[in-house]
Length: 168
Image (cartoon, rainbow, N blue to C red):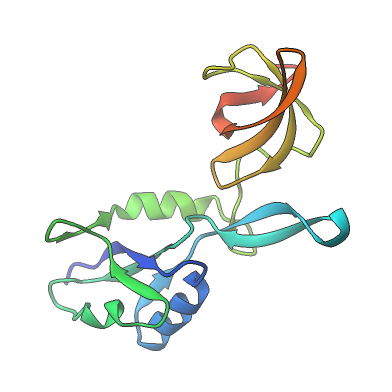
C-alpha cells in the first residue's frame, strides 16, 4: 500500500468545510493555514487565520487501492487535481517541510513578519533599489508596499522575497 499526498481543489472559501467532510469520510487530510493581517471594522488592524493555499487542501490516499471518486462529490470539493489522467502528487518531504514551519496553533510561520509602516528596500525585480514602506500582506507570497515613484507615493504589490529590511 503506497499512500501519497494529493491535492484537492475546493470551492471558493470552502476549504475548512471540505476538510471536515473529508475527515468524516475517513480520509487523512491537511489544510495548511497562515496568519493574515487585514483591515477590520472601523479601520482597526486585525489578524485572521486563512488557508496558506486558497482553494486547496491535501489528502493522503493510496489511489491504486482506495476509491477516490467520493472526493469529487464531497461538500466543498471540486475534485482531485490531475495532470491529464494522472493525479497530482506531492512528495512527502514537501509536506514535512511545510509542517516543520508550523507553530503550536498549526499555522505556517512565514519568514517575513513586517509591521505596517516598516521601511524596506526592494532587492530584486523591476523596482530593485527603491525604498519602500510595508503596508500589508496580500497573500502567502505577496505584499503591498508604498513606493515613492516619480515623486508620488504609489501602492504596489510584489513578491515578499523581493524585499529586505531597509538596514540590510
